[in-house]
Length: 471
Image (cartoon, rainbow, N blue to C red; front, top):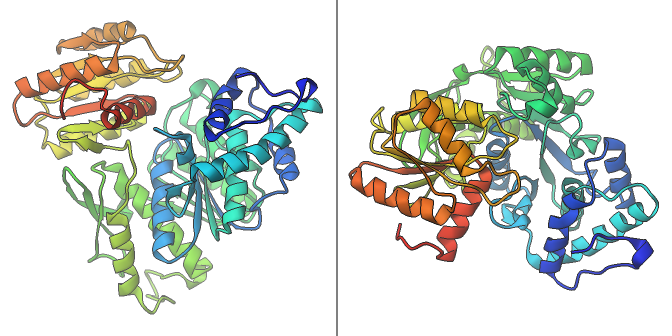
């Protein structure tokens, strides 16, 4: 696909697939731009959907889950909702969703053509072609405006302060999820530095809800909120209690007068999902109940909501039906896909598996891959030190940044004596994992982790019938 240039005549995509191919080529001929560039891009698109109720979400881990829960709860209240997310696992359409459904191919193609024209004009004027993420963000906002959504949930891509989504001037709420070390070469090499980048989404006077698990990150977020005159709600692990971790779900209750006897079940067996769901529940309560002085108060017991039991039932039912692919997803019997791709997420993965198996993980098989800009040696070291498994298989993802399987093999053998095999082709890796898992007995499971790219590749193989083994 040739890059766009008005000097050579206006190129026009003839189909949805040509549009997708063009977008995939964008990283080859442009780069990330400052926020002023994104603001100019949105301005030329007519500042689409700027007047909607926007919830802006940043964080290292859990932001996609929190966004999904917020979307799900709002939909349970009959709210038409747009959701801009990344990355996608199978189809780029997944990044732009209306009321839980990815945008259809026809709409995607039509909006692409309009956004392409604007991008080509900017390039011709010497302003630079929008980046891959900018382009899709512009498309998302156009789709949301056309669909007349009431709420828009924007998930940041990388960081927060300089992320393209931060060009939106007036969100109604900001949310910051769990923060840990990731993208350190860009965001900084300490929790405090990374937290400062994430906290860059906090706008003057706009309330912020955040995961208070990290003292270092919490201090930075509180300080930023104070400087911006923004009320903030820090959510700690005392806000909920995990009741059960099962193969198909995690169950928790909330620690407040109104919800203490209500059990919420999230169909993802990750321990972090209790915190993520609690953040979403509190955020939506704020959105729907108005300013904080009308919310329930533990001391006074005051609450404006008159049909609370009915609402609790709606929300619990909605959360129990959530589908968030690639997050401890049992994609086939005894085959789990988890997108854990940084040290913090790996720690959550290990904790979840150990709880699920009551510590008995010796029959399990890991299939692992990673991209080069992640702390993959630290991820590998943690896995080896904290999780006993039957075997480990390393493979390579289909991306230029994919770490060679041979390099991953050396690292695993540096940290563990567990049987570790190298299968550069994913199909071969899954075939070998299935053989080893069967040899290990009926209690063993296969866990594919290390990268969301790997999660997407596994899903494609399972759905496309490209495997010589049955799961």
